[in-house]
Length: 60
Picture 1 (cartoon, rainbow, N blue to C red):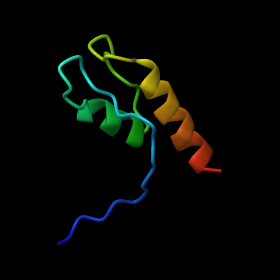
Picture 2: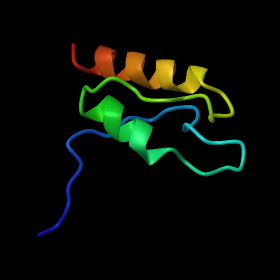
Picture 3: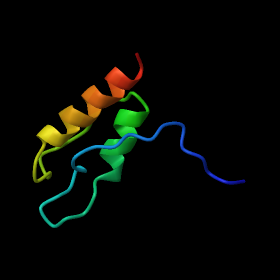
Picture 4: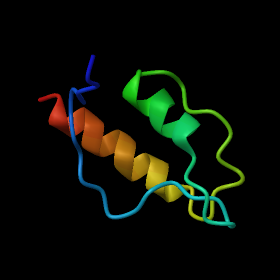
């Protein structure tokens, strides 16, 4: 089977650690409507708020 995304959202920035690794776990949490876990290791934690808001506004 081929994996197909349910939704594609363009965002200005991805949640990255200071070393540049993308925090896929946080993206999964937002996509599955779970509470977002620890964001203290992110270079800019406000990115998660932008992604969450974009996901909610896309549901309308």
